Structure formats: structure tokens, C-alpha cells
Length: 150
Image (cartoon, rainbow, N blue to C red; front, side, top):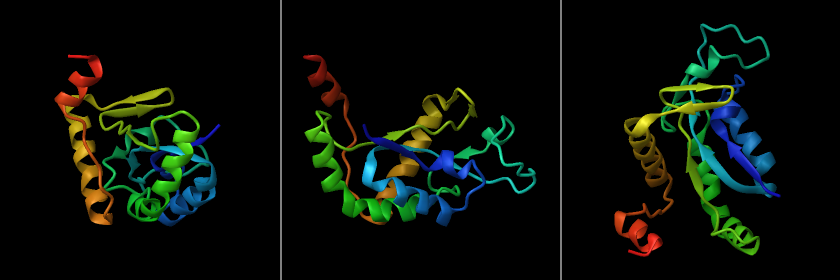
């Protein structure tokens, strides 16, 4: 069993970037993959100690929120080879980041971004990856065709 780190969900608990980063560090030994979404803390909402539906409207791209993605990804850069080996040993294709932005709305049981929101989220993730120096490959239509046997 492995953990999925989701900084957006951590920030939605009214935690700042350093607190989110510390949560990431606590999960790192057990990490299997990462959900990438972010959250902007709304200081006009009174924090009562619980996440409610009103708070779940504040998801944003990963380059503008409070989840500390720059800190997390800067550290993750050195962890990727080890995480990739661990996941392959478990039978997965490797370590990966899963974009889960909820840009058009979030809720207790899911979120929605739409095709345009997903494009915004992927571009935001790529900008942070570029900034911290993590290389990546985006799948092309040719990759999809090959996977489908075309």
C-alpha cells in the first residue's frame, strides 16, 4: 500500500505552504503518487476546524495557491528515481503526478474542471515543473494511438 499526497486537500484545511510541505515530508516515505491541485485560503471565511462545502470552492491552479507546490516539487525532484523504482517493483508503471484540479468546483465527493480547466491546470503544473527543474513528457496523440494498437 502507498499513499497519495494531495497538497490542495491539505491547504483546504486552512494550512499554509510550509505546513503543507511538512505534511508532504511526513508522507514521503510512503508516497506512491501525487494528486496535483491547489487551494487558495479565503481569509474571509471563519475557520471552524472542519472543511465545508463553502470552502471547497477555492481550488486554483497549482502555481497560485497555498499548497506549497514549489517547495514540494523542489524536494520531490531528488526523490523521483527512488519513488519510480519503488512503484515499478510494486507492478505500477512508475511514480506519477495526477492532475486533479477541481477548477470549476469541488465538493465532498469530487470536483470538476472541464476540458478548458484541465488545460489551465496542466499548463500551471508544467510551469512549476519547469521552474524547479523536473523534466516531463506529455503524452501525444501518437502515444495514445500506439497504446490502442493503431
